[in-house]
Length: 544
Image (cartoon, rainbow, N blue to C red):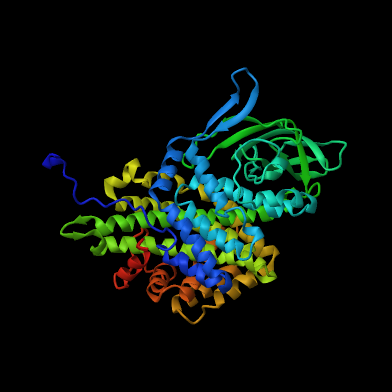
């Protein structure tokens, strides 16, 4: 019998054994709203099955184990032969295999594929965000390869397969493959035109040998990589297979693995090319143009990844506050805690609603939707990913000291939270990309204004924010220096428009009052007290 001093009381039970999809009302409603009704029943069943798997004790343990046992580099075998392999914990392979089998790399090959995949990505990466990187890069490689029909015919069926095969062997012998990317170099970072990796043509048309390095190359055990290098005709895109068709290893020298703040289950590496065989993708000198759609797809995944992390952080905070008592009652019922939780819930729902709207635009594929994405994707990537860290910090604080302990899982979320803001171009890169879209593609702004205009007249604060945004857009003085402020307003107005149209009145009212109307402090938990915050919190509570 336990000693009375060790009796455990007033602790929240683990948030486990639940359907992560069904418990997320904003996500469920977004799927219902945007997906073809004929696909809806099948998609709901598919996503609920993935949600139950994600919420299971087993998968949560896989996520923890993959994070606690990061990958290890083996440059040589026992005999001194160079092998350049990375060993992963079995839980990593289980997570990645499940992500592939759940269709998180097959958006391009089925009706409503982008929306269904986006919802699945938001669900599945709540178990462990690290496996989202290879899933994202494999998914995003498809539009780049489609610039070369022969390459697409060869590789796309394997990229969109639901079969996970972790063995290193020629891609032609595998039912499914994964792709990585190697774009940035030491001296350039996001300025890929400063790359110095050299591509020398071989006798066979379209084939080259590469010499150089890549400063960040994630998922180095993938089957193929899209890389940028300087060909005689300028910066070009290349496909580098990990294993050549004759079964020999391509020259792919992993110099070291990055010791990262978070995302520790995923291997990010520095690699050297020295006579590495590659096949050109697209025309010489058109490397940036070749990868532009790939970059857009991975940026959307950054938005999805941040929405996923925010949802898990908010779910944990509300779950804890539902069971934890202090000062004579549940934390959930305390007015000040309710304000914090409601503010967190608003950020999460706004992120999810925006991310799913972007995914639906991919499925639509019309010229207007493509123009909308050109502006909306970098704006969303800028804003949603930046809101992730404040949400993670405040959600952790809701658990008090328990949240600061590794066993809670909250520190893992916090370490992960800045990453999506950095990957695929940090904040300034996104802001400048929005400016380029505004200056060079007038159709992008027209499509954006048409989208936000659908909510005009429904909320006076939104109407005022749209008017103020138009005033800012009309003033080009010092536009680059104030680009961040402008992009923030673009994103917030878009989120407000979507919530006014689709969210419950209590959610839309709170968002517009605070984010657009200015009745908000500088920290989370400073919403106007007169709002119906209890309804906002209850909507976000993870009950399925």
